[in-house]
Image 1 (tube, rainbow, N blue to C red):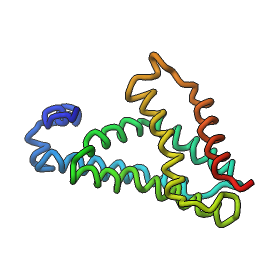
Image 2 (image 1 turned 180 degrees about the horizontal axis):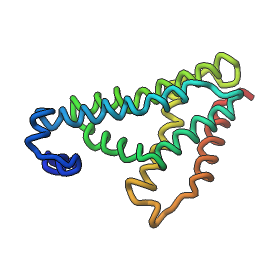
Image 3 (image 1 turned 120 degrees about the vertical axis):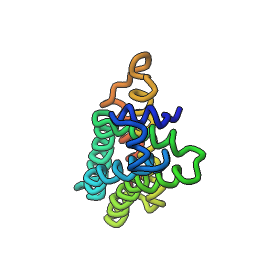
Image 4 (image 1 turned 135 degrees about the vertical axis):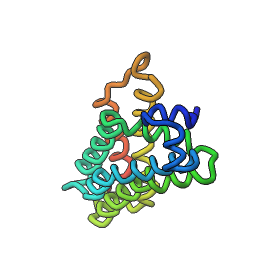
Length: 175
């Protein structure tokens, strides 16, 4: 459920009138959160662009970085908020994708393009491959953190990461 302007003001420890003064509409606040989150993610995006020494190591490094950021740095919660705000909204949905999610997909695509060029990864649509790797990581983090799965259905994070990486490498490496 989307938080009200009053709830946003309480979270920001300010008054509703202060939010209205600086942002105007509720959507402008959400857009500012998206933009700030995208800016904070630039370091991860840059690290994700750089391919590792070999395909399997590279996939493992990218996936481990993503899993750590999602599960230990609160990014899963920010992405969950972006999805809730963006679903079915013609303004916020595209803004969420553009500022918070697509930069990661693009960075991962660039990493995979390097592995295709080296002959280590099958020549595929690397953007689709990037979404294929990102999706189970995001879903797993949301399952554990934001949806409360850690309480009743805990995942061994390392085993889950190994499973995702091994499956991806088997599917895409050049044999």
